[in-house]
Length: 167
Image (cartoon, one colour):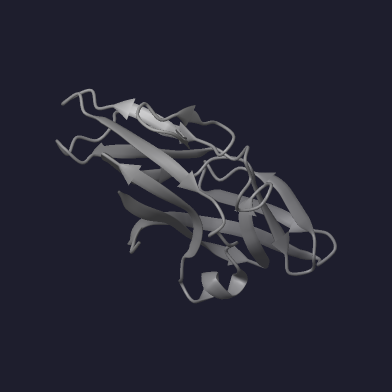
């Protein structure tokens, strides 16, 4: 079992607190990324979609997981379980420092996550306090005008990384 933390960053202009619409542990937020088989090393062809609201029983023992999937190349089965409670929003300070914010932790057995894909379902606040809901980052840029703060706001160059955590 290996724990992977999905960490994100982006350039934020007059914005702070970028996170999923319902917070970092939003059960309805969908994470899209490719997986790589730890046995044969082959990546999945399509992105895998995971959310906290969807779980399946483990085939052996008790408990649940968010994904059970067989590798199409070697036939090995693997699981990915989401572990909420460790995420935090991407703040203006982290963005300006070029640092990443942890978003979600995944316990992986047989797979490792790779190539996170930004989509919709984000929220962010302007420095003046205006909240922008259901922000779509699939085009890798969000621009708007903050009437309250009387300034343009922008999210650009979103990027992500998966970091191995020590148990």
